[in-house]
Image (cartoon, rainbow, N blue to C red; front, side, top):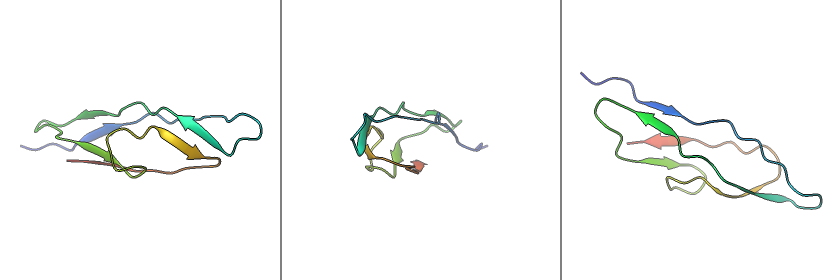
Length: 67
């Protein structure tokens, strides 16, 4: 019997230095669980499993897909 897949990703807040319009952000990989296994996780920021990168100042929303 297949169960619902679980993805857990902590909320991240990052500050920038004065005068900068971007920030380098390290995103911790999500915790995943599924009785049938999770083959991969991709994010909407850069299409990979690692959502770390340079983000613009302001609120940035993203999503994760698991397969």
